[in-house]
Length: 198
Image (cartoon, rainbow, N blue to C red; front, side, top):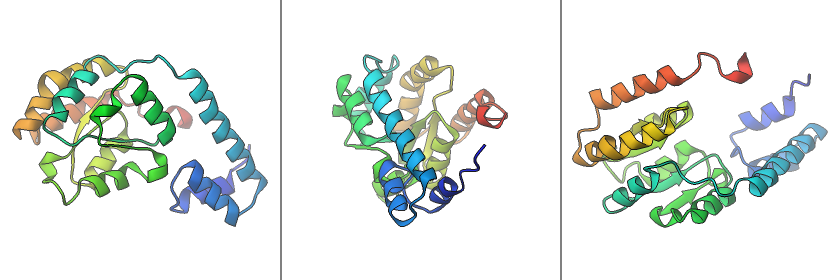
């Protein structure tokens, strides 16, 4: 099994972990290993574009966005390619709720939050909603609050956000014990070891 040395160098390079970042790294470090990585990533993106259609948002996502849009600036931050994000959000008529849809080409989630919110809003007025530890890390790095979407319990998480988390956030009562309780539940849903390390 290859050690993917050049690919690891790209990941550690500080360049965006995106197709554009990989292309930039490849121009300075030509290598057959990177050619394979490029072929794989472009094939995966093409396959996703071909197959991901008609998958609606979870219940309570639209309602949450509608309610938040009236009182908050909403941005989408994702490691997904921007083209796929825009396509999926437009397909389900939810792109209109977001001021910005920021995919991997625009930087990391941590960078997105820093550019969009840090220093512009008080920390307890910035909320990252996410389903992965990296989402929580991006929120913490920017002093933002975090609402977890629990893996395997997405529908219940979105319902909870809509019915209680959203109003607590807007009322300024989200931070503290309520957020800590949600994060503790989230951490229990995560495997001790990710599947690729088993």
